[in-house]
Amino acid sequence: MKLKAMIFSLAFIFLANVASAFTIKYYNKDSKNHTMEVKSNGSTQKVEFRSSTSGSTSIQTSASEVEIKTSCGWVKVKDGAKVTVKDGCITVE
Image 1 (cartoon, helix red, strand yellow):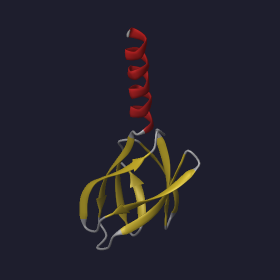
Image 2 (cartoon, one colour; image 1 turned 120 degrees about the vertical axis):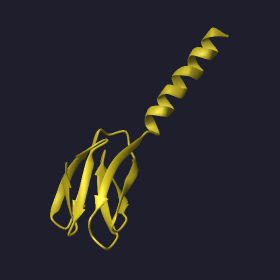
Image 3 (cartoon, one colour; image 1 turned 45 degrees about the horizontal axis):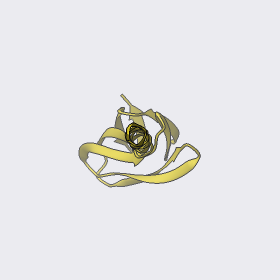
């Protein structure tokens, strides 16, 4: 019984780490939405920053840092970072 409980606990911890979300807090100064490509752990995803607003967006990854493709090039962003979007470019605060 103890072995079964330990296996269940380890499986839960593993799944919690795999399913963790990477969060970016943002302020989009532009009057249009921006959808950008995100690279993490060798895979790509899309992320959307809504126009003229602040908010947060999540990316499903276990990485502590991702790269976002903007109109000004690739930008490295760490988990929990605050960014500003202006003219399609990202600056990390």
